[in-house]
Length: 252
Image (tube, rainbow, N blue to C red):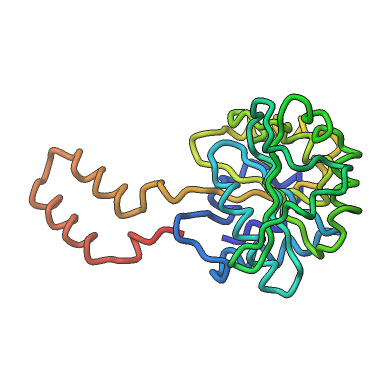
C-alpha cells in the first residue's frame, strides 16, 4: 500500500483511505518495508525538518520515532523533537526555550541511533514555543548540527491538548505527514483539519492509516457467517475453509 508521496489533491479524492495509504501497527521496526517506503518518500522534501501530525489516534508518536530511527540508519545525524506534550504548571524543570541557546544541552542520545529533545512548556514560556519565527530559529540555528529533524507535532484536532498547537508547529516544518485511524475521522474532517493548516497545507506529503485493530478479511467473513442462521452445515464448512487460508488473516 504505497501511499506516499501523495499530493494534496489526492487526499481530497474519493478513494478509500485503505487504498492510498501505508499503515502503522504495533511491533513495527524501522527496517520494515512500510517504514522504508515512507522514509524514502519523505526524504524528497526540500528541507531537513519533517513533521508528523495526527488526525485522530496516537499513531503519530510511533511513526515519528520510527522515521527518526530510519533517518539515523541512513547516516544522517538525526533529532527527534517532541512538541506534542501538554502545558505543565510553572516548574523548575524548564531547562531551555527557543532562542536561549540551551537546547543542545538538553539533548538525550537514544540507543536506536538518533537524539531526543523534549521541552517542558509552562505558562511563562509557552509563547516562545508558539512563535513560528522562534521555532525556525531553533531548528535552523540552535539545532543546525542535525542533518535531519523529525518533529512529533501532536494532534491537529487538539484532543491531546498540546501546549503548542499542531498548526503552529506545522508552519515551521518543511514537510508534513499525517496519521489517522479509520472510524476516528471522516474525510470531511480530515480535509477541514488540513485546510486549518493555512499555508502549511501545501507541505502535506501524504497520510498513513493506523488500521491494525481493524478486522482482517477472514474475521469479517467469519462474523458474517456466524450471523447466518440458515444452512448450518455450510456455515461450519465455510469457517473451517477460512481457517486454513492464512492470507485472509494477514494485516497489511
